[in-house]
Structure formats: C-alpha cells, structure tokens
Image 1 (cartoon, one colour):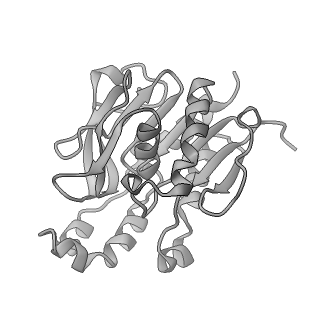
Image 2 (cartoon, rainbow, N blue to C red):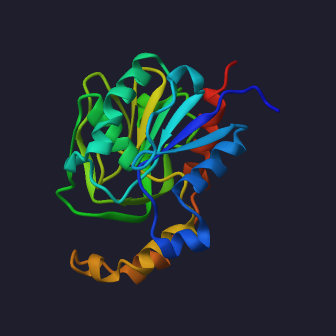
Length: 241
C-alpha cells in the first residue's frame, strides 16, 4: 500500500442524474485525470460531509464545478472559505475548476458575478498569457489550446496579487495563479467531448433564450487533450519531490 498523501477532491456539486448514471460524476472524471499523474485520491462532499480533513494530511486539493452560483453565498460554500485561505497560506497545492475557480477567487478577495455576456459553453479556444511561461501547471500548454467550457458566472475581479494566466474573447480570467501553489481554471479539464455533449442535450430551451443553438454547439464539440493534461500535471506537482 502506498504511503503517499492523497489529493482531496472537494465535490461542490453533482452532475445531472442522467449523465451520472451513464458517465459518472464530476469527482469521477477529476479522479481519473489525477490518477494519470500517479495520485492517490479521496472525495469530500462539501454539501453533505461534515468536518474537512486537516491540511497536513493532504498532498493537494481540487475543487469541482457545481450547478450552484458562488454569488449566492450558500452556507456550505462560505464554510469552505477560511479553509481555502489556510490552504493557500500554507502552500498546499490547490486547484479550483469552474465553480471551484470562482470560489477560490472569492475566498482570496476577488469578485464573482454573473457574466455580462451570458453563458460560455462548448469547446472553446483559450489563449495562454506570457505570464504563464514557466508556470508549474500551465507552462507546458501551447499559446492557444482547446478546452471545454460551461459557465454563467465569472471572476470579474481577480484577488489582489493574483496573476492572470489565460483568457479568451469571452472570458478574461480563464486561469489565474495565487502565490506559487494555488490555481483557478474556468475551463473544465475533466470534461470529455462526450460529457459536454450530454450536457448540451438538456440545455436546448435554456440556450435558446440566450440566442444560442445547442445542436450547433454540440456539433462543434471535440475532445481537448491539452486542457485535460492539466489534471495529471497537477497530480505530479502535488507530490513531494
């Protein structure tokens, strides 16, 4: 049995039941990516489990996406804020994905709101900034890469001292770093093309109200191996050298 400390996946929400039954849940997809990097993995349900594990017992933390909204300040979500502040202060490797990205930014003094341009959904192109050159998590990615995106909210203002690492025409803060060991990514490294198409199957009426065509978006969806590699990279950097 390995003596390696685990990476804790903090599950901030669950996918739709029909997707979960066929493809698994957010934590399953994240765990698969982390295991490619050799990580041991545990999951904590932020909306159901009680005490969070002590930080010294973890190799790292990954915060999942959610159908909740950070700006609603739900009690279970706000309860994570001081714990995340401690994790960053203690240099515990931390990665927030989508909702997790927004929650991490909120916890560290940033601002999260509904995106003024509405939803970003589909396989999108993300541009890596020059500030990401040499970054431990994103530095290996090309200057422009495909990624999966599904979000109605945005980090409107980054935390003080945060470094913006990636963006596109819709989303100015697709990735940021705080210090040397904490990152947020608005895009979804854990989503496959299949899982994103499954999401789009049920969003036709919702997207139509925003003038978007779910079938057209779905037809352009493809797998995004470069974005997906972020999970294995995070697993490797979280392990003691």
